[in-house]
Length: 288
Image 1: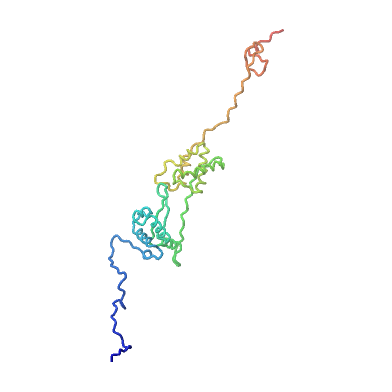
Image 2: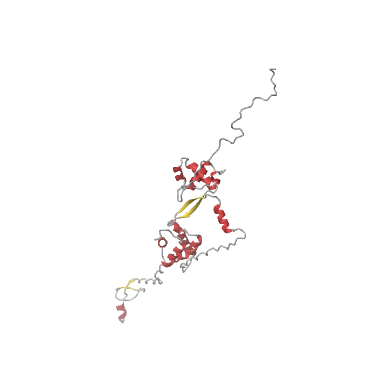
């Protein structure tokens, strides 16, 4: 019969090559072992969920650079085409997630510079410091003793420490940093040195001369402990006291008024109007 059975199975379908088989696409690696010029990068940076792709790439680049390389915005903008604005934003991302930190330090000569520190494991620095302070329970850890601070060197003392004199001395010390940044003093150091400067001012030394004595011929490599250097100079170069000035001589007497001698009419000086000169005084008065 020609009638088709609707319940009969249809013709078998051809098998889809992609069904029930491992995914044909996706990433594969063709790796070779590096023996020179390579950098170990943590997946926490390479696969960071919050950093932008530019920040991740910039972080990888910075970690691959040698010590002392310049990683400021201007240098990175000259190296890459992204521009200063995008590079600055990527640097802020890395800094906010702990991959960069900035530290200020003083270089020889007294100038303060900002250094950029690259961290390949954010938080490692803090964890190490915390482990040093709080060792694991049961671990013998003798307490660390801080080295006692060296006492400040002695300085000369003024004979009359008037408040105005000490304030002038303190102002002079506070202004030394304008002549050399390495002479930046704390409030405690300034208060300690002020009597020594006052002793100089008390000896008729001008503030300019005191400043010159304290700032001249400083070491070219910078001053390691300014308060010690200044205290030494205030003591070793202290000038002698000024010469003694005795009481002022009494004023000379005012000369008497010129008059005419009452006997010979000669001009003489005398406080009395009817005075006589010496010759007339020595001659006897004629009898009338």
